[in-house]
Structure formats: C-alpha cells, structure tokens
Length: 186
Image (cartoon, rainbow, N blue to C red; front, side, top):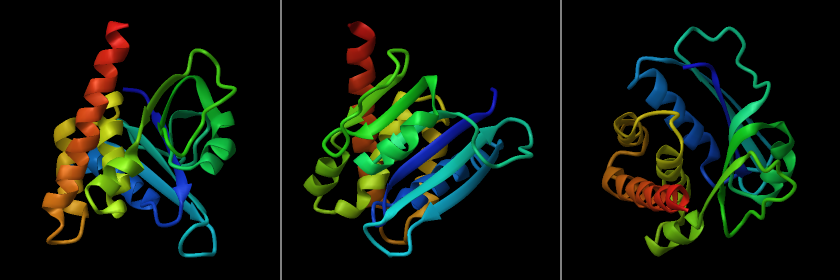
C-alpha cells in the first residue's frame, strides 16, 4: 500500500474529528499500520467549518500534512467547495447526498453519495451521522478493513453507546455495499 491521504470536512457538531480519529485508530491500532491526523476547526463549538486530515501508510509517516487528497469525505457543501480542488483526478469523493451537490469534478473521480443525515435521523440520533458515514466509507473504499473499523468504532464511542453506534456503522456499511454493487453492475 502506498500512502493514502484522506480529508474529512463538514461543520462543527457533525462528528468530523471523531470520524478521523476512528479511521486513524482502525489503521494504526487494529491493522498495525501507521496513521497521522491533523484537525482544524473554527472558533465556534457548533456550526463552523471543521476538517481533519488523515494519512495512512504501511511505512512510518514523516510529514503529516496532505499533498493531494485520495479520498474526500464531504459532510457539507462548504467542505466540498473548500477541499474538492485538492482531490486527485483519480480520487474518490464520499458525500452526504442531501447536503452536498458535487460539481466541476474530473470525470475520473469516483463519487459515492449517501443520505447519511437522513439515516441518522431515522435512528432518532442525528449525532451518529459521522458513524453512518464511516460505515459507508469502509464499504466504498479500501482504506481499512471492515473488522478494523468495527473495532475502532466500538473502542472510540462513549461507554453505553456501542450498540447504537455499531448499528449506525452497519447501516452506512450496508448502504455502501448496495451502492458499490449497483455501480459495478452498470
């Protein structure tokens, strides 16, 4: 595996930083690889732009900042507008299809949309949006294995919420499998 560069962007309160932490933990702790994470957020606690940069590699990582993004996860239109220009022409865009309207991407960029917010709200817990998205991300990319992400989710969420969060994770994951099956058969 070569270095994989991932940017997750959205708004404060959507769990962007937690999603990056779970991804890095899955790679480093549960797959015994190397990962770095850098976070950025606005001064407000909720509603301002925030993002996280995650690098994953089989070799030690000497520089944690991203050059070109392999995978962009956009949970808001603002995140898409800010970060899509850094997406590799052969990269992957993963986005909340009800909050983000992708545009002006090279035809070689793979795109995968999910109504993640709606799925979280259907579970009566909008706070699991990020976990739904991590499940979807796991299904549509080869960043980390299903088992590593499942373990990282269970180890990262508050005690007593593991069942809810794993249900959210598998909701996103199963939707990702449906989307990839549709994409590969067309």
